[in-house]
Image (tube, rainbow, N blue to C red; front, side):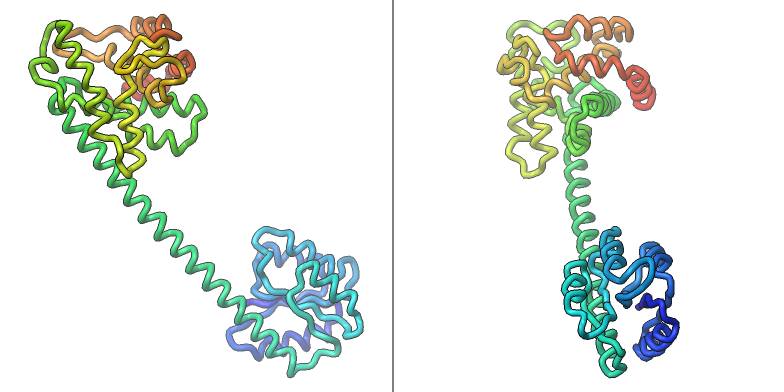
Length: 343
């Protein structure tokens, strides 16, 4: 434990330093200049401050005020040394943040036990703070483990859907990162962005319930087949809803809403505008853009220019204009994501 002793009288400093040396496991640093002492105590945190009241340039009261106002200096014990008759000074010192007092002339039989007791309290406070940090870190690790398991569950379900769908694993990764990019550029909460990145790959998990004769059909679907295909949104929602995991609840929301359109002409419920959750509006842009620009067994890939033109044309009709605008304004980052997650 380290003690800072501030007094403009060298003989008082020598006496207090000698007495402090009697306390086991304790070292001290002395200062005759209170301004220099304040700077040193703010840079190197002491475990106890012993400060005289009457000093030039900076008296004990002002020293305590400035010391307490520094970051992480509110809990360090301070002993003020003052004359026994200066009661008003003591009252003001308590208001400033002094912990205890020592009267002049210093009584060694009082000084050493007070220093020992205050350092003992400081030691326990440090131990409690350390334990609190350890517990906080343990909670952080446990929370991270939960989030990792959630992400693993999402990834495995997405891969299960992928085995039944001709779309590639790179497609779901691109959609995830496109969605996170849109959310970031819209200024949405970083925690939401992280959940969206993990949940977006689940948008088509409902295709697990779509018959192969429809899901894998190379040609256009009939009206009856199209009705069945649309059901993948509600099936995905049923698979994922009511989970205790926030990521899976967000994935359920995305699965249900990513085919809704801004003008209300989408499915499954035909909701419009801000009735569509932000997650669904975001993933709609990411999904359509990547589907258009990806080659499939049943179609050729669109050019980037044609896909961008469709997004522009669909502003306010199929797509939320704000989502389209930030996506196209982030074109360099869009291209980087396409390059990173190639088929």
